[in-house]
Length: 240
Image 1 (cartoon, rainbow, N blue to C red):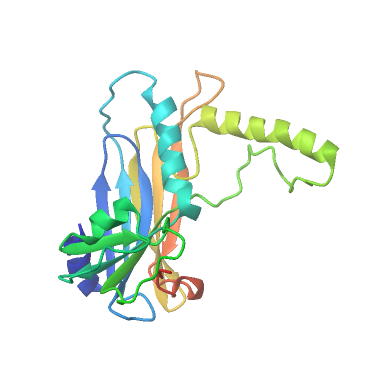
Image 2 (cartoon, rainbow, N blue to C red):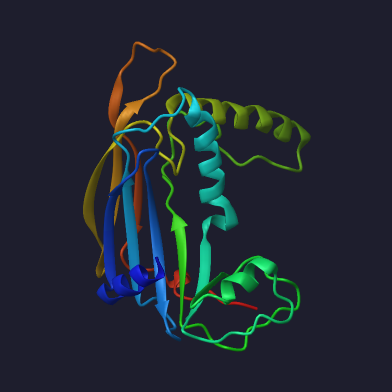
């Protein structure tokens, strides 16, 4: 995997279109080579899922929920740094898992989960940050139209009801923000974005409805990302 990223980094801007037998999604990965102060490349992966490999009829209820938690964890970003062909010490305040990772020829460790007091004295040869995209549009069926006032007990009480309604409507419509579980087809397009371009990944599928006789087939989810990292995305991942 790291060798593939290293090769793709040479192209600067990369779009990978792929398929999966479980769900569709969009991901972006920024890559830093050496001590670069800004990303040396941006890679975007667009995945659709038109054919399924189902083990049991209602598996998506559990699997989609688990995938949502995994893909949106760690503040929805996964950061790693690595060293190539280096002899690294595994002494000191290093967890057992990271100690094992550091012993590999290409040592790759996450920036999160380090033991208190751990330090790094050899700059990494590369680093990358990956995030999964979400549909940021306001939805017509969303019952939450304003922020919940946490200092107001009545607002909090009503907020619990609204959050439950939102989750139920999202479950029925089968339109969570990141994961597209229904069989879907991707439509990829490009739009100008200042001096660069942004890519739009739209998912076509049949939306769920309380009325089971309704067949709402259309572009019900979209992910949009610029091929140029924003200013706040320029800084590379760092270790303690």
